[in-house]
Image (cartoon, rainbow, N blue to C red; front, side, top):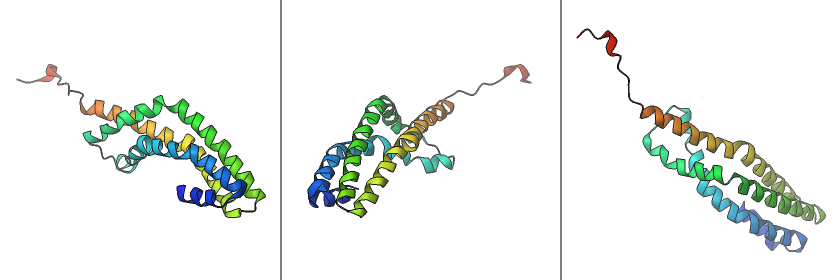
Length: 148
C-alpha cells in the first residue's frame, strides 16, 4: 500500500500532492494498526479451531487499548477517507486509472476495518477474557452424594 502511494507521490501534479497528503495521515495510522490489530487477528485461526492457551492473553492489553481508541480510530479514518477522496479526484482528472482503482480499494479497506477487523479484534479480546475465566474457575465438588 505504501509503495503504491510513494509511486503516486513521485508521479507529480495534483495526484502527487494528494498522494503525499494521504501518506501523512495513513502511515501513522497503519503503524498503530499493526501494533493494536494484527497480532490479535492472528489468533482467529487457532481460536476457530478451539485452540486456547494462556499465552493468548497477552493480546488483552492490545484489545483494551483498541477499545479505548475507537473514537480516535474513527476520526483517523475520516481524515484518511477525505485525503483518499482528494487523491481519487486528482487521479481521475489526470487519467491515472490504476491509481483510481487503488484508491477505491484503500477506501474499501478503511470501511472493512471499521465493520469487520476492529470489531473482530475486540470480540477476540472479550472471548479470551471469558475463556481465561473459565480456565481459572475452580471445579465445585458436590459433597452431598459422597458415599464416604
